Length: 80
Image 1 (spheres, helix red, strand yellow):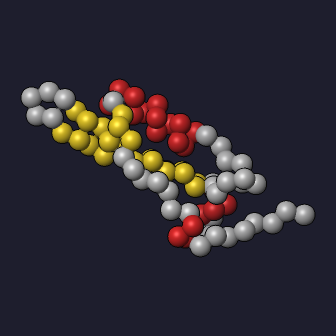
Image 2 (cartoon, rainbow, N blue to C red):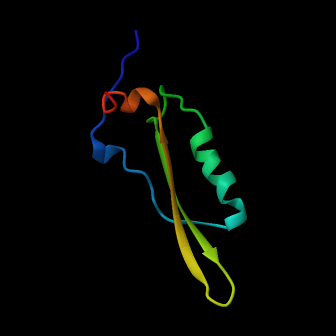
């Protein structure tokens, strides 16, 4: 019979190195993060990415977008 192993928080820290992305690709890239399922037998049900959206033009700047997802049972104890 299977079981659920609860890991310490420091073992589930995602890599938040900024990933450069064009503004036109941001929605598709964020959707990949939240739209891909988890195989809880082989991976922790938590995923996150930090995107760096660089705007060009006369005043270049960088905007940040954090996308994360988790499985419902992972947070169900917090939502009561």
